[in-house]
Image 1 (cartoon, helix red, strand yellow):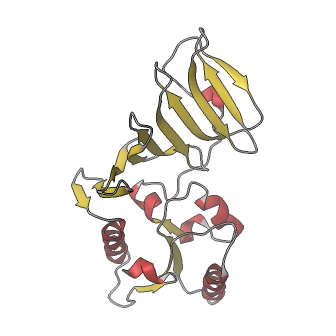
Image 2 (cartoon, rainbow, N blue to C red):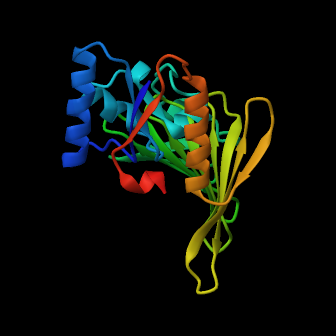
Image 3 (cartoon, helix red, strand yellow):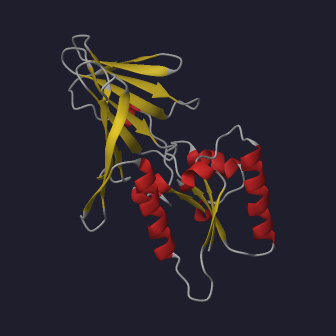
Length: 234
């Protein structure tokens, strides 16, 4: 298999992405198998990939891979379908978001909306009006990333889930000696329940490449990894 590896596939593409896509189309025209591989998490990845002419079967996102979401069926989620665990809530509709309140007027959640008023993210508040979690939705309609906030309003733990809601990947954010927020490690839970620890996302990425190499291994046709962003090979 030929893997064309990039950090992202943004809506506004650079010359690197345009060159990568030209190569991808050339391989397709000559019926040579290839895959676009994306390292960074992006809830809009499948939207941007489709716009670029990349079919889901030819797209492998690292986070999708670990989240068992490579071919998740799309669905539209709206505010009325969300469960906030609170009885008798009411919704105040605004242009780009919905505000959810208790019967007594306490803020439960801010629901940020896409242009079609499907759910983009949900900010959740505790009984003391403190933000404690933000759920980010994949464009296909499931919670992909949850960010848990510390009492001083900083992102502490981040968790990625499968479309079924099972946590499979975690990272931890802490302040270093000079007060700069840093990721202190990654934890991956394999499908068989094995827990793996990685110091950096680069180590996690190497593990991902190893898994791809194993999954597509062929004695007759060796796998080829083309790094379109050099830092992904560090």
